Image (cartoon, rainbow, N blue to C red; front, side, top):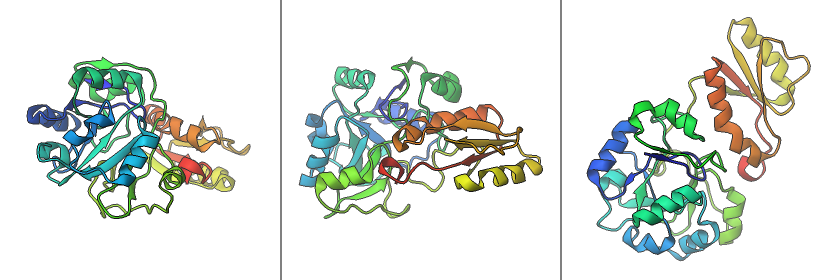
Amino acid sequence: MRMDDDGVGTRPALGRSPAALRRLYATKRRPGSHPVIVHLASDTLLPAWARRVPRVAAQLAERFWPGPLTLILPRTPGVPDEVTGGLETVGVRVPSAPLARALLEAFGDGVAAPSANRFGRVSPTTADDVRRELGADADVVLDGGPCPVGVESTIVDCTTESPAIVRLGGIARERLEECVGSAMPVLDRGEVAAPGTLARHYAPDLELVIVAEAALGSVARDHVAQGRRVGVLAAQPPADLCQEVFVIGTPRDADEYAHALYRHLRDAERRGVEVLLAVPPPEVGIGA
């Protein structure tokens, strides 16, 4: 099964069924040591999954749930190792997408639901993306429309004295810091084991190059001269851009840029782009 979430499309499995979880890992071709996020219908289910909920975690949950925020908390003894990758912590969140909420409420317990893609690939944001990605491995696809956020949830580790961001995502750092009233560091990859934090994750099957807007034309010409199929991801492509370049227009607003990013990456892949030159969004909010 695949369901639409608020961030990206997810591939759910019963959170306490080792057999269902093993099938989930096999479908995604995901390492068993890499934990998955448990989705809940309500924070009232937290005590069944987390043995302790610090005050700061409760603050964040009250402000941002339902929504694209995952909290890492100490797990209860009954949480399967298949969910946590053998760790003593568990990532939990309450999604806002209506279809996901309805499924969770009908089930009445936690559902493990990583993104509905092969491990390491770009996450899907539409039902069609999932059908192309998983094919016959997705028995049922629940289509609630395009995912409204378009990128993964932000993950915050609440197991230490001061909370820290493990993965940037749908909720901007500044909003989290405003909620807790203090600075919140962003941990480097490898400092903590959490979903979606490996060195290669959510990666397209093309070369992605970040380019300043002023240099876009010259960099594109260099790649075209090398015989490569070039794509450009920019709000305002330069007038001197050579005709061989495939252009994908992007909004300047950082939130809208994030919402469309994975859709654009998949579009570029389908069009055979070998190198995608991307002008980054403004470094504010989710783009910081």
